[in-house]
Amino acid sequence: MARRDRDEEQSEFQDRLVHINRVAKVVKGGRRFGFAALVVVGDQKGRVGYGKGKAREVPEAIRKATEQAKTKMIRVPLREGRTLHHDTKGRWGAGKVVMRSAPEGTGIIAGGPMRAVFEMLGIRDVVAKSTGSQNPYNMVRATIEGLQSESSPRQVAARRGLKVADILGRRQDSSTQAADAAAPEAEETADA
Image 1 (cartoon, rainbow, N blue to C red):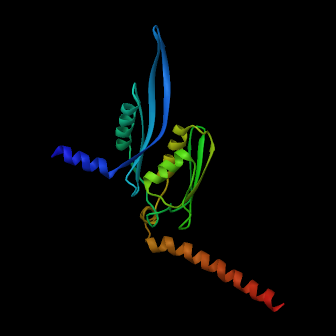
Image 2: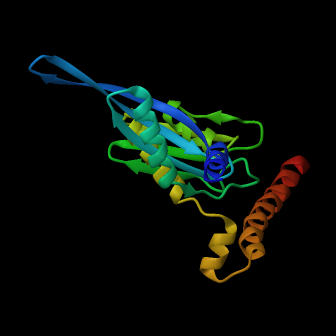
Image 3: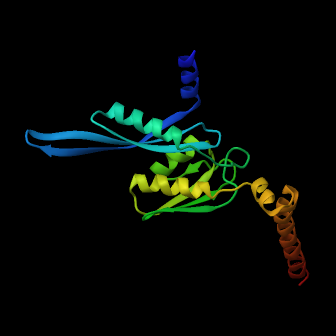
C-alpha cells in the first residue's frame, strides 16, 4: 500500500534536469569523477521547487536532487492558471531576472533554466529576461526568489483588509478613466 502511495506522489510531480556538472578529484591513482545535478520539480498547477544532488554516478545525483526539490516546494498564485498576476524581479547573487505577465497566446519567452521553472510551475504565458550571471544555479534561485514575491489580488485584499472587488475595481476604474480622458482630446482634434 505504501508503495502505491509513493508511486501516486511520484506521478503527481514532473521533473526537469536543468544542469549536470562533472567535477574531478585528483587522487594518488589519477582522477575520480563525480557529478552534480540541478533539477526543477513541479506539479504544473502552481507548485515548484528545485534541488541539487551530488554523487559518483549521474542517475544517483539526479535522484538526490529530485528528492531535495520535492522538500523545497513553493506555491505561486497564477492568474487564470496560465500567467503571473503582476511583473516581478528576482535576484540571487549576481543573477538577476525580470518576469512579466503576458496576454494569452504569448507562450514562454525565457532562457533555459528560467524556462524549466516556468514549465514545471504550469505557466503558459510569460516574458522573462535574465541579466547578470548566466550560472544556472543562480538563475533558478533568482527565478524562485522572484516568484515567492508574487501575490494574488485575494492575498493583497486580505493583507489590506479590503475586498477583492475593491482591489481589482481600482485597476479597471483607472483604465476607464484614462480612456475617457483620451476620448475628448480625440474629438477636439477631429473638430479642428
